[in-house]
Image 1 (tube, rainbow, N blue to C red):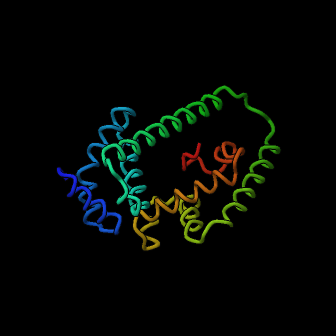
Image 2 (cartoon, rainbow, N blue to C red; image 1 turned 135 degrees about the vertical axis):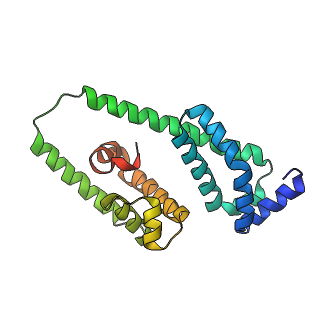
Image 3 (spheres, rainbow, N blue to C red; image 1 turned 120 degrees about the horizontal axis):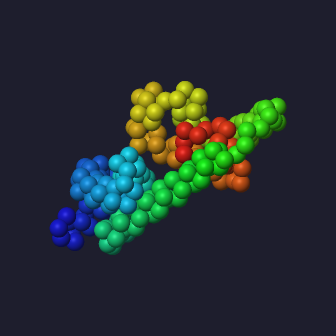
Length: 195
């Protein structure tokens, strides 16, 4: 990948769905992405997640790769956005935890129970609008507590496919549930880090 032509050919191959070109691209860029994310986030887990997310996004949008002119700038832009999103999520999560610590306990158990049922109903309505694969993957993760890898084995899909379906499902739920998402998340699916 040292000269432009080789890089251009590789990008065209990725756009055409070549897994070997994608693996070559992954081998070259994943250490850079990991170290950049690690430098900013100071978390190996988050850095690894960003590597996975960047490459998943690239593979899912592979047809656009043939139009990339400056690959380094393109990849760095993606990493920068993911790092920013991770900061924002971490900040929201920490704020949420602080609110929980400082909120006074209430005796409104009946009210909370009713709210939980209402939120569950809203979630079920939103889930019924998902495509079958996304709904099933979400159900396996939420109700059975399966990891992406376990779901992939169970449904005979790739882990990348499962992660992509989950990502789309969660994006849809964010749009659909809108302003109540934080409350719904706290009651119904804290595992997914939607805040």
